[in-house]
Length: 139
Image (cartoon, rainbow, N blue to C red; front, side):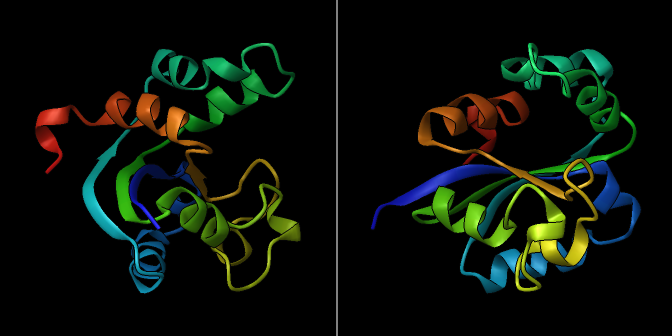
């Protein structure tokens, strides 16, 4: 299994609920290593740029509004098959269908307020990671 990197993000709902530390603990317990971490607040234009792939979908405006509504925690996660490992730990997008052993099952409340984001493929991670972290900050 290859050691890969992926972008993880703790969304405004989970940050506001005070779940950041518990989510980070779940990540580390799952064997993923946090190699970069930043708390920031996305401007509306930044949220629109980050989620531009969804710009033609009905939920795009609501998503951008939500993602710019409060602080987020962006992180680069590393580990064996990190993309699959993180997406498995996150659970399904709809938190109401996520198991209690997943981040979304524990900390999400709906399909929209689902606590976390993760890259879905190596190509996506290659675009998403530099959105938050310049290469010089990654070791």
